[in-house]
Image (cartoon, rainbow, N blue to C red; front, side, top):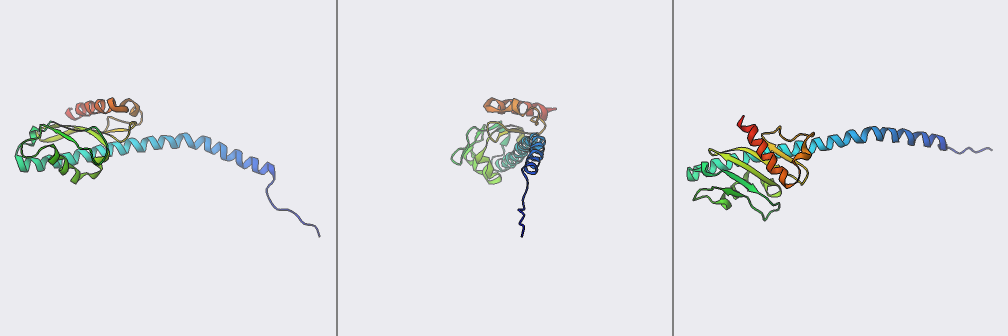
Length: 171
């Protein structure tokens, strides 16, 4: 009785590996583009959510003090649960710590990001967030894109992004 071994030949295996290699060479660069686009989109979405949370906080401050228009800037330069934001111009009766507690009620994720926002007339007009040292997002969106996100990376990039968002908001 003759027995035959079943399996793949070396040539068949090499052909399959070559096909997988060609597909990987085509797909990997395009997948990297999707990752960048997703991170930029996430940063812009976070900035928009933060802007809404700051506006809601300003409404609450105005209900308490009738002077939320005194707040001109909101900054948070460190990450972590023990860090807090500074509300420049916070009125008497609602200091920075009280405003920060209100903001955290509307956006718990604010503890884990660095951000800076500009306020005028009791409303947040522009906001920039930094999720990590590479990806920055703004509200209003349209400042940071996949094509220029590296221009707004690192610490100086967030200030640059906020200035561009303020300009966009004023037009």
